[in-house]
Image 1 (tube, rainbow, N blue to C red):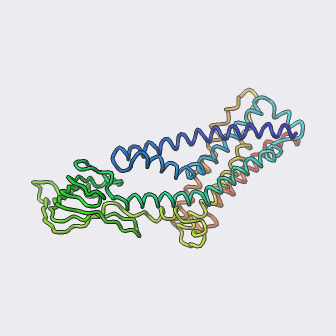
Image 2 (image 1 turned 180 degrees about the vertical axis):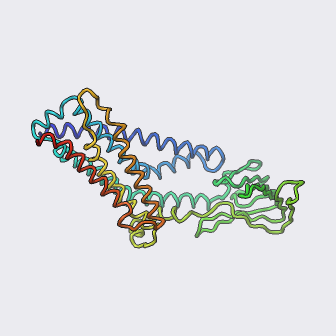
Image 3 (image 1 turned 30 degrees about the horizontal axis):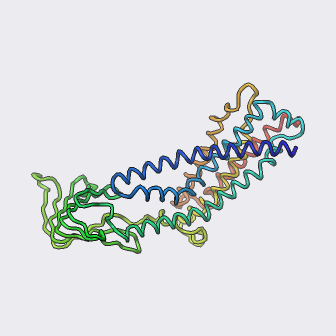
Length: 355
């Protein structure tokens, strides 16, 4: 049976790597295209886009790895049923629980890797990425804009044009700014000079304009206003939100923070490897097929369970951060529910062989 155990684990691990690579290609490709779109708007360079992908890679891995484990186990076991190899194992006394023992080391190892990513590597990489972005802003606030070009801020709220930029990128001359206000009124500003300042503690960026004119509304309407100013300060990029800051915090820091948002982030990080571990064995319980059905017959029905598991975790995570549910009922109730479903589904597979 040792040979058989190595045989199925080798197939499981090969499928896991293939599915993981495919899912990462989809997720990373989509995010990279988004970064390239920002690069085309002058918000970042192509080299920065590639570096940001590297920083975020652990975050992507920890999310897609549980799905890769689930479908790898599902396809491995479905093939055993479809080709009647499972019948041979069952005749030798190896049922669903026997396969669970065989898979436990593989699934457990992958879950430990996800735990390492979720609890340690991803927060550290996110913190390094934020430091990198802050350094970029400090080095040259508007290094992406050239004289005569238009720059749209990351939030898409402001479009800025200048005739001249100082070598360090912080001082501008003959500046035009257009703001798309929430009320729908266009606000335009023109100034002879300006400079970029940053609140280093909060990461907020300000545009300080000198000797200019502010236009609000549309010409010809009753609410159209023109105002001259000597000095005008405009916030153009905002500080990170509380949820963003929590993603940068270490797991130890979150454990000491009793706020609902911190508790939600803490339990989410712990829950990802648990989600990975339970999903692997859940796939085993959902994999039984008839010989003529083929190995892919259970993919769609089984996918419903793993995606509903993940969506319930997301829903309860949001409820936990909003303090809508107690901590012990948050993510843990979902884990217990699907752990029970996993045990029952494996028992149901083995039950006929015990009659």
